[in-house]
Length: 235
Length: 235
DNA sequence: CAGGGTCTGATCGTATACAATATTGGGTCG
DNA sequence: CGACCCAATATTGTATACGATCAGACCCTG
Image (cartoon, rainbow over the protein chains, first blue to last red):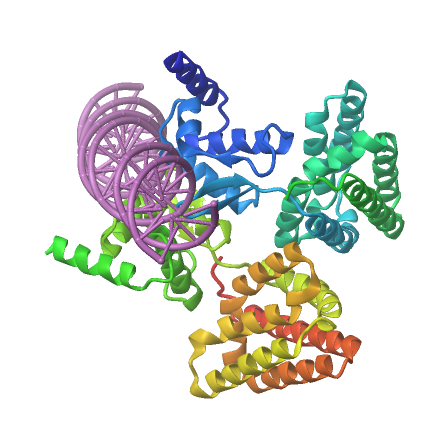
């Protein structure tokens, strides 16, 4: 059975192309598992087990783990392996504070350079997002939300800032989904996205930036409150 | 002869302990080479050559390169190797803009929690920095500057922000050294550090934050000007 | 002579095998 | 009875060997 599973696992990885190397594919697979919550924070990732499951050797596993560590999704301690890293309340607060500081600022730089094509793409994203909300396909919310926010800021001409924000969005992905599903703020978020888009297209850039700030602030506050209530949040 | 050289190389790496694994040691060695300018941007890093030079196999080399890629020091293209990555003007501007946005904000949060011990450490760092300036030991400037700035912000209670700033400081290390040695702003920087420290200790936190902002802004502007002049800046 | 295809060399990516290190359980000593 | 030490085991780290992929040169063809 072990062999069968290995073969199946290998096929599933190799089949899901779009990657040029196995290690990249494994990194992506593990990333999704972590972000989706299938791998909870604190869980230890043993190289042997993963290698057997995917039907590959440990080398690509190790490299995938290193890539994940770069993104802060796991923490590697020499000779002691890798554990899925969760976020403390301080880190969540910090991440949202950073978003509040950076995103509106970048939107002001980026908004005037958004082309009609950008707007149509963003609207498509928003529609897809709305559809996912109704369909309840929770897993895709974070991805779509991320692409929407990054799309808004695409033309700010600040590559490093964008990379940082991409990391922030990824890391607050799971918490944000939690916040949305618990509070039912999905409709609110959707509406705010729409309004931000409209304001940008109308040239009301400062207003759009303000709304974006409020949008992020609200999510952050709401989320911190949730964390505080269910105090049993693993590190 | 090859064997002899490999053994010697291995000794030199393993001897410089402080690291728990060979790959970490290699990562640190390469990091220093890149930050010191011994490895210029655009240079291609071939795994075989590095492995032979360090007297180890390619596996730790690969893992070291992945760690460096995490820090943005090299870029890895599948099947095509790793190249040392330089910074474009936009990236330099972006990095300093981020520092201007983040550092003063964090100083306000951190300053009131600085203990007498922190102050004595920071003064020691500043003294060491001053000594390095006079001694002309350019290589250590960045390290000391980095530790000073991070030390100031240590108690802000914003771990993610701190990590981001640490990355920013590292990446603008070499450009900053360039700026300091070209403009002779070393004395100015040293004095500003001293004044910031004094203001913090006197409880003039807002003033300290303002000076910090000016301090970073000046370095950024000056550096961008240098870049513009010597337009032959490799990507 | 130009263009394309193939073939060779080099380099990277992965598998397998071995060595080093941390953890756990038992045993002994105080 | 508790604490410490030591050995066995499991897990990680590294070396060696093999397979896959890409860049460039050469040859063949139109």
